[in-house]
Amino acid sequence: MIRNLFRNPLSAIGFTVLTLFIAMSFLPFLFTSHPYYEQDLSRRLSKPNSRNIFGCDEVGRDVFSRVLYGGRVSLTIGMIVVSLSAFVGTCIGLVAGYYGGIADQMTMRVIDVFLAFPGILLAIAIASIVSQNMFNLIIALTILGWVGFARLTRANVLVIKEMDYIQAVRSAGAGPARILFVHIFPNVISPLIVHFTLSIAGVIIAESSLSFLGLGISPPYPSWGGMLASALLYIREAPHMVLFPGLFIMLTVLSLNFIGDGIRDILDPRFKPKIN
Amino acid sequence: MARILINRFLFAVPTVIGVLIVVFLLLRLTPGDPVEQMLGQFANPADIVRIRNQLGLDKPLLTQFIEYMQGILRLDFGRSLKNNEPVKDIIFRVYPLTLLLSVLSMIFALTFSIPMGIFSAVRHYSFMDNFVMVFGLLGVSIPNFWLGPMLILLFSVQLGIFNVSGFNNWYDLVLPVITLGTAMWAFLLRQTRSSVLDVYRMDFVTTAYAKGLSRRTVLYRHILRNALIPVVTVAGLQLGALLSGAVITERVFALPGLGDTIISAVKSRDYPVVQGAIILISITYVIVNIITDIIYTLIDPRIEL
Image 1 (tube, chains in turn blue, brown):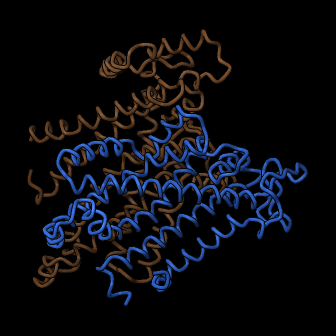
Image 2 (image 1 turned 90 degrees about the horizontal axis):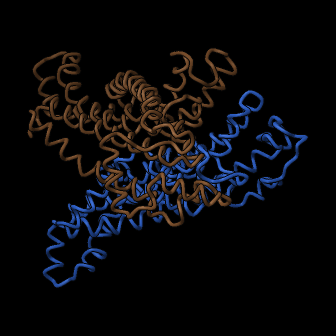
């Protein structure tokens, strides 16, 4: 799979950049000697130089270290939220799609309601009543994320369950649980993998947006969105504070999109001839 | 026709009621006391009782729900906890700016995405097509809370063409519109290109060429008429999504719109304002989707109701 991914130049770039970012975020001590919290007021707002390659922020902390540690938070939250959403959404989608009837109708109405809140609005609403911490942030983003997985799973299950081989296993005496997990699930997994990859990008943007609005990760812990929010106050004196966190968000999201597109090309049988 | 319209709107009623229930339950079913959350740990007990009474949280849940629904039907969202101003007055005062920003961004996105998408599709896999599509990919990946500051940096700080923030005249909306519209532009660009390419491969296009019609006639009369229907539909459905992006854009440029109001209200835990604003945006979103749906069925003769 990874070898196939490397045949597509864009996903090869995405994969390389993302791997590099993951290494930098989770092993920051290999790349920087400054802790993200180390303050040095004499270096306040200093421009990028040989000691601080991305410069310093408003209290003299190293922007490079903060970008790395912020990346760790964003990538971790992205993985956790998307894994949770995928688990919850897929289970609900499988059951709703397979059993149909009233369970399916109810699920679809609930999904309609969740989709009626555009973008991160529901997460903002949740942030307004719960206290601000990592756990609540993950819950709020998962509430946003499961819907996509549920819809996608349900739509594919509806197609697969009508196929002849499902009839065959049913007449061979397989129970619903066996049919669902052994015979249907493996056949709906491809679009879910693509959605999983692209969702991580979506969650990273959503988390950064909330942190930018001051509703996500709370300072002094670094987050890409939070760094941009404070950078906006010093935009005249220290443009480097705006530049770097955003650049990292964009490159991460772009890489994930490239990888997602690459996986889609590999998994979608309509594109098979191009790869082989 | 009238029956179709009524049907579509009736179909949305359960969704709207669902939205209202979710917003209602959010405040009531969250673990912990929402009023203590609002006022902080060291609040005066008398204040807690007063606010709880003002929000009606001391009544049974069903009574609260009936009063809440009655209020919404009269467009009464309660009063702000901060200055006791009716929430209705606050949100309807700032909403026009948010709507204006969203609509202008959509116009910006459509103006540039459709011609470029058609161009890319007509010359698919050429150098220019790849060039445009790379820009499209950048456009969908760039977060608007970074694009905004970067535009400020270039046009306001370096070149001094626009004001950094605030809203005093139309001029101040240029950068916010670009910021909010770019992701939409990129999205619609990709949509237009793939839609035109899909139609390109259809039999009736081959037939039209075989009849000896010029490339131009085939493109305008046969391809675009079919290819742009899904693009316009997607644009309509995404207009609501712009409302959510507007929240962030308004924050970047300090525009006094609904988004800015929501975030300030969230930070000061002014729940009635948050609640009213979220209901207003969600209902707008649902209504825009219904209208798009109706327009779609009207312009595409293949769909029968």
